[in-house]
Image (cartoon, rainbow, N blue to C red; front, side, top):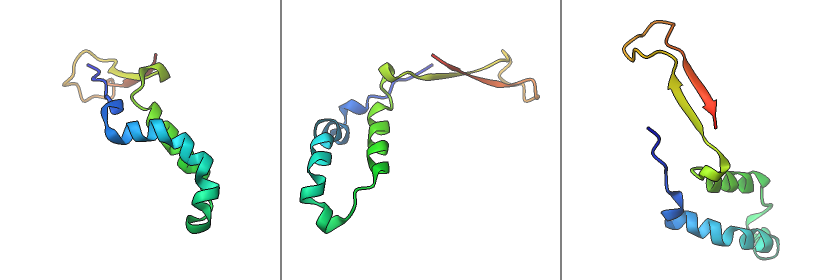
Amino acid sequence: MYRQRHPERTVFYRILFHYFDKFLLEYENRFEKEYGYFWPVIKEVVEHYLDCGNLKCGFCGAFCASNDIGDASPALKPSLTSF
C-alpha cells in the first residue's frame, strides 16, 4: 500500500518552496563574486525535490505479476505502472 510522503511539512521544504526563486534572482548580484558560478544542476535538483511526493506530479505504482509472494522463480516479474 502506498504511503504518501509529506515533504511539505518539513522546514527545509517550506524554505525552498518559498524562497528558492528569490535566491535564484539575487544569486548573481549577491553571491557569485564570493561563491562562483551558479551551477544549473542545483536548480534541477531543487525542483525535483519539490516535486517528489507531490501526487499532482504523478506517481508510479509497482506490483508483482504473480499472486504467490513466496515464488522466487523467474515467473515472478515485477511490473511498473505509471498512473
